[in-house]
Image (cartoon, rainbow, N blue to C red; front, side):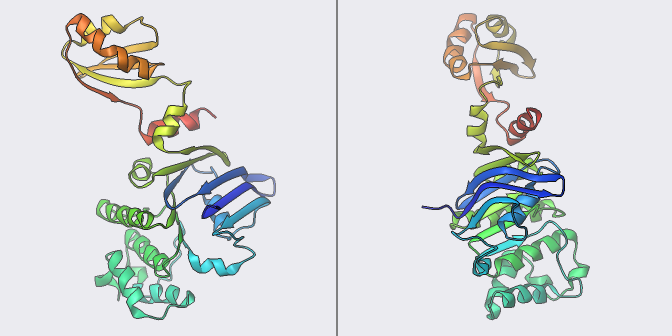
Length: 304
């Protein structure tokens, strides 16, 4: 059974510049974060998926068809672009209604529903040119959702939004994923992607660097030591016990214990209780210190 979005051996070049190189990746229902530094090829990949650009080679399938050859699929895809794609002289309501009419939707209730969803009902009569950047972002999201799409593509959708707006938009995206929509979110704000994306796709230099969950990507980095924080009432005695043991790369003191770098995290977890008993130390907490999306991404970028 095909996945909602499938990219197969896709490359895109502009003259001598290669923006995307031999990328093969699929996207399922739920929220997937697309990560990468500036120039990594994220926006180009999204434009290829939505049919705004044609692959130089390879193929793109959205809901089973090539969006460049079957325009009918556009009624099931929505894009929130990174750029300021709004008409400043239109009111917020007029902007959303315009997008609704382009999708063949004439019921006012559809517009009312998405304006309420993004908390813009009270400001619906104001012109977009009067809106803050964060409010324009929410208007763009409303315009994208008014057609009730199956695939939603979001390119830096949280730009300009304040913390409250960001939290609200993230919850909307999570709800869309939970409802069975395929939601692709490109962002450079790693902490926010970690809050909303079940799956991750990392791009570096136009190539696919990794895909999976944060945990699975970190677990796959077998060549990189794991950093484990150990809270203990006798850190010096425990450190002396651990230094030099097999699989221990380094031991450093932390405010309430130790930061242990190990090449064998499972073995360390099994052995630590016995080591603590041997020196009379009490262990109150053991947590990984480098399981975050930021640490995973920093490793992926730095390894290329």
